[in-house]
Image 1 (tube, each protein chain N blue to C red):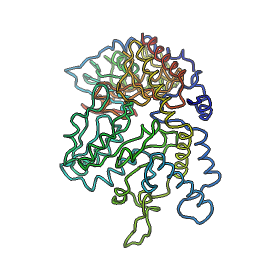
Image 2 (spheres, helix red, strand yellow; image 1 turned 120 degrees about the vertical axis):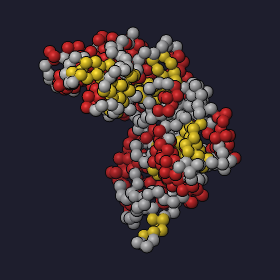
Image 3 (tube, rainbow over the protein chains, first blue to last red; image 1 turned 135 degrees about the horizontal axis):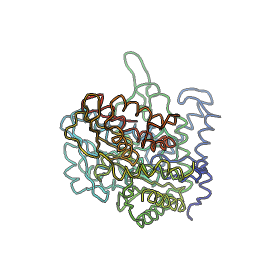
Image 4 (cartoon, rainbow over the protein chains, first blue to last red; image 1 turned 30 degrees about the vertical axis):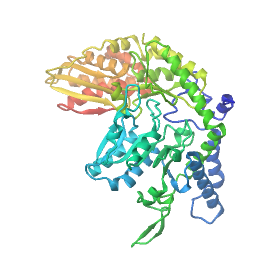
Length: 406
Length: 150
């Protein structure tokens, strides 16, 4: 049984609207995904019925809020198959999670001359926090190169992983190209040399089942808003022994057991890393998004999106003057492309006039753009609610651009 | 807004200046220049300026960008050659007002009137104004300055 797209689209009220006299065709899911009623209702029900602070009050609302918040944590744990709820830290998003690991885990063990290893394909969120920690410590940022197909060139990985390397941080799926990186193999190679690994899963979790125990990654980070949950909530998975050994990175309420002016005793995991009142409604929304995806079936989602990717790729390849950037063997449903003689920014405006929402620009991955020698690309990125008719609209929009710029 | 309005933005003059930008060259004897960048879309221009007193004796540009930013820069170089700094400032004020939808007397705009289509596309105003911000920086300073319009 495949997905019932008509029923799914009824769950996403935002999709049912006209833009510039055309039905909205939302193909900017890699930037941010839309939210189903189930998520919107979970958030609004929380505020209407259960809102209170967590982990504090003995009153009923506080207990309900705490149960819902911790219930969401357990949903995240199950979603990525972590061993324990203690390994799931709620954060604002993948960016905050990378910064947390860079500052709390990596910075204390970095010395001048050490290496931090990332890849050429990373989103700025998995580059800049490492650059910052390198500047703070005198460590060097090393980069795994990529190929013109848009895959990582792993031929030199063994040399890049050496006694100076203190961490490898790599994206599971490239947001600019859609490439699915062989992170499990890369993790095994790093671990063979005792090097811990952080995986940026922001573009992976909306599209595929992720099992952190199977990957054996040390840290896995993702954002809620790219997987049908609200903005401002995300999760950091970390192996418990590593998290236990790490110092807190922000101080405040909720992350303490006792405070005096002489000494503060930090709280246990995961609260040690959750200073201040958290984004309770966001976490509940993330839990609802996970429920929604699991009701549909993550494997069915992956299959439908793969079908969309194959059809979109075939259709765009059949058009003269259209070049797809990123030809990896294994890709998520992201199609970055160039239209000959037309700047992507113009493409974006003309698409918008036809109701087709795509991202144009450097996708917060300027090194990828520099590698291909282009300032920007147009990017169509699909979610499970997208239809094959919307690929027709994409193709029509490209033809419209070419007609205008002929 | 109908799709027909795209023709207001991408008028023939704009398409022509995008394909064949005027004064698109380095200027070895420029006495002012500035770099203009729009980090959001990756547009990057260099504007070269040769000032003789307060007269713009020559102006040129190089770089890459969308059709709107390239055409706007090209049209700007044509319009400003031979003008004084004060006249250039007045023209820029008019161009900017026209793009943001203010009522203006268009008689002194000449070809620059084709940029009026931008007002229906607020997200693109920054593309059309990039070269103008950059030349302003070039006039105010001697050499290298980065302008961002975000």
